[in-house]
Length: 182
Image (cartoon, rainbow, N blue to C red; front, side):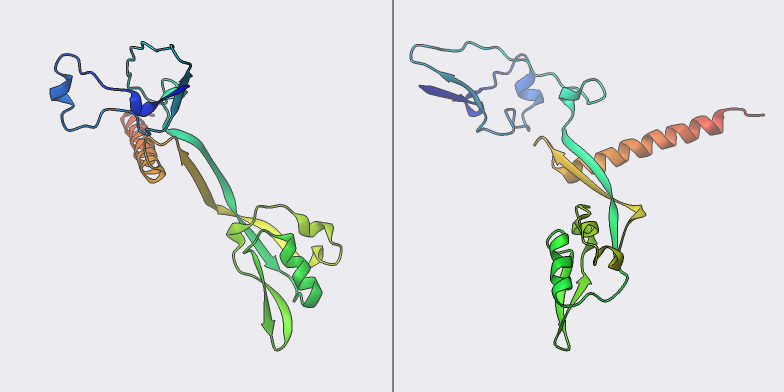
C-alpha cells in the first residue's frame, strides 16, 4: 500500500510562470495531507489548476475556518461566600473563573477571571448560591475567535478584515457626502 501525500505534488511552470513566481514557494501549505492510498499497481495521473479567488465569490476561497464572537461575561459576588459554599461555587464555573483564598483562616471565594467563563449557569441550580452571584454580560466588550484554514495566520486575517471594513465604511461615507440630500 502506497500513501500519496501533498508533498508528492510537483509544480511544473507553464510559460513565464517560473520568472513571475521566482521569489515564491509554489506548492501546498502543508506537506502532510493524505491525498490517496494506492494499492500495488495503481497510479494517479492528475493535472491540477490553481485558481485564486476571494471568499466573496465562493466559500472555498475563504481562509477562515470558523469565526465567532461573544460578549465578555460579568460575574459579581453579591455577598461573601465562605467555607464549603466557596468550594461548591468554584466548581460551578470553568477552571480559573473563581478562586478560593485563605483570608484570616477562612476559605473565601473571589472572582478572578470572568473571561474564562463558558456561561454554563450551573450556579443557578444551587438554591443557597444562586442569590449570592450576579451573572451578566458587558454589552460593549466583544471576544472574537478566528480560526484559520492554515493559509494565513489568524492575526493577519483579522487585520485584513478590518482593512476591508474600513474601506467599505469610507466608500459609504464618500457616497453619502456626494449625494445631494436637499
